[in-house]
View: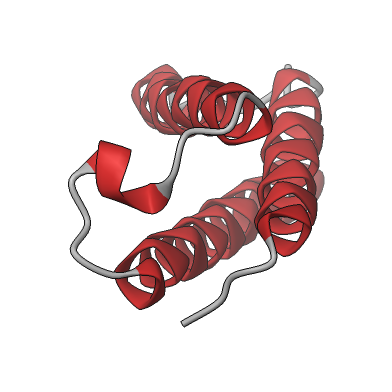
Length: 104
């Protein structure tokens, strides 16, 4: 299977930007009372951001998916897809928190 590395770079970059934007949105929630949830969301986003940054840098430097322990490129693509899903889920939590804080 021939993989276009540029597609991976684009997809990882988009995931990274979305995660960073979500982190910025999270930092704007000053009036939320549940700091435990905020801290958990921050840890989740920061973990994803760091992992995406490292993966992106490695891919840009020519490291293939087998370096990350995957037997096939499709497994690596599934990992990227799972990041996208997790980021969307975290974004929804942030939106929910924003809605709760506005309704008070």
